[in-house]
Image (cartoon, rainbow, N blue to C red):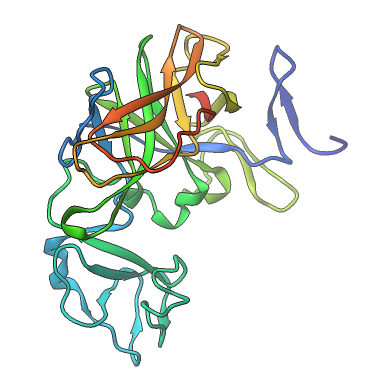
Length: 304
């Protein structure tokens, strides 16, 4: 770079560059598994964590919804239905942008992610709170979700699949892991930070006045990445202190919960103290309609 601020570590790797947006740890926590509506045929990956309820809603929230009216201007968070009063398995629409006279079921809208999010009413309750709903769903596409794998042999998989109880199609995005409890960290770009900058420490901005570094925030250090590596291939971390993994592209699975056939998904395994392995696992209990993709993409890092 010609102008600006740049810091390098002892390995001559740039760790701060005011032409690049940094990342901070927006939220951390530990969650417990929820095995409802889940059947794993792999003993080493027996815990399911349903972390993303983006497209689902509880039955008890039906009472807060109203019939959509073209003459009404809705506020963010309003729930509406079109047609008959919804019941388990049917759709509600949540307003995510103040709007009026926009039918959420129009052929070119239907939960378009700009004005409305289409949600499916479910008849069961999750053990976990949804991570994304606690961390500003509007910026989910700008976030990374990391999981801590502290021990050699720990594995984690993030998958997206459909199932069809009673003929109704549901979309779920669980994480499957060998761990009985799972620590997570939500990572976001620093230019999304909402805290005020005051007190002590150092803040660095780029030429567009965007925040790229803040010394009084917990930051994420992405140590290495794998891009489309083959099954059983490994990448290395710089030290054993690197113990977080992020699966950036979930494996898609189509299922009907008919307790037969096989599904496939990518898992990330901590293969050694500084070795991370891409594996493909098979699971019984879910029908699978497409050939598995044996290549994987993931990140490893630490939360400073």
